[in-house]
Length: 229
Image 1: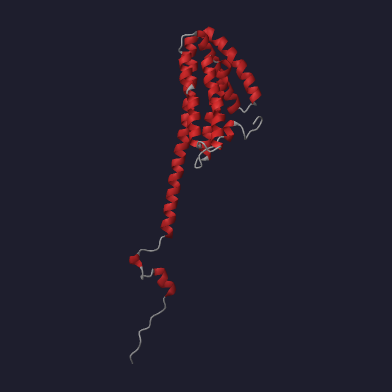
Image 2 (image 1 turned 180 degrees about the vertical axis):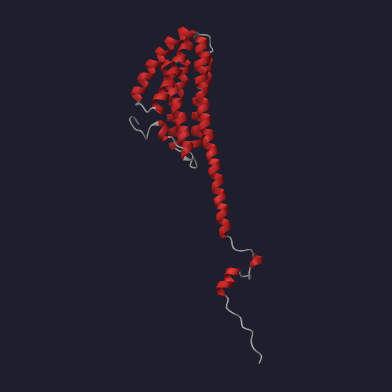
């Protein structure tokens, strides 16, 4: 829904019932970054990059419709959608190593625009209009200024590849931190449950009929030996 912060794609995505809120936030961040890349590559990329980008964007709507109609599960939605986003990566790698300088420059512009958009939108919270206005213009002119000075090869290995690797590492680190945190929480919950059960368990059968010192002190009374005389 246009203008809605709740019904837009990343916020209205269905998730499996047992998915924690933290994992949802990490997944949404990954999807948001991927959508920035798809939009930037659709604007600047080669026809193949633009097609892959639009494929993921359009496929999301179709998958959501299938989930709402009960045809597929939420888990299937995320698997297929994540794969449709991933196929942009090998296509992007093939483009920047194609040897076609024009195609490589187009990919560099898309990557630069994506990096600017992610930083402006997710880190600094700029509006989407300001974000894309700066990113589109900046992505175009930064590449056109830097590539002639340092060369396409240098830009490829010292800017494009490090940027892609950093983005992938950031996503993996986020998922790892969430997984490690969930394991810690699960271990703490199991320990608390074990301690609770131990406190509620009755005394062992062998101890039945044996009063404790406290019980003797509270409930006993002086015993007087009967006199026979």
